[in-house]
Amino acid sequence: MSPTVLVFHPHRQASRVNAALAASAEAAGAQVRYLYDLYPDFQIDVAAEQAVLEV
Image 1 (cartoon, rainbow, N blue to C red):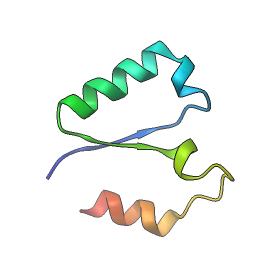
Image 2 (cartoon, rainbow, N blue to C red):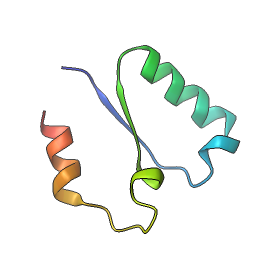
Image 3 (cartoon, rainbow, N blue to C red):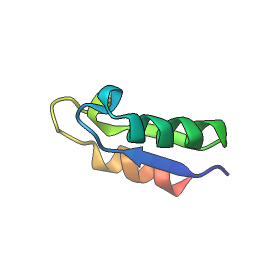
Image 4 (cartoon, helix red, strand yellow):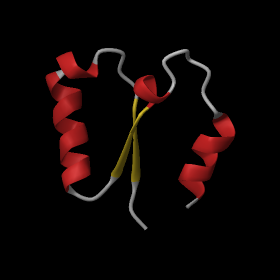
């Protein structure tokens, strides 16, 4: 089981800190989920996200 990291940043490509943190997490084997990319309309599928975290 690998950890899951949720990234909430509207302009993560421009954020050096968030990009570095996400890249480090991915390199360490964590699943990184970019919520702004997954839900650009801000309609988060709560059940789907809970399911990801329950694995």
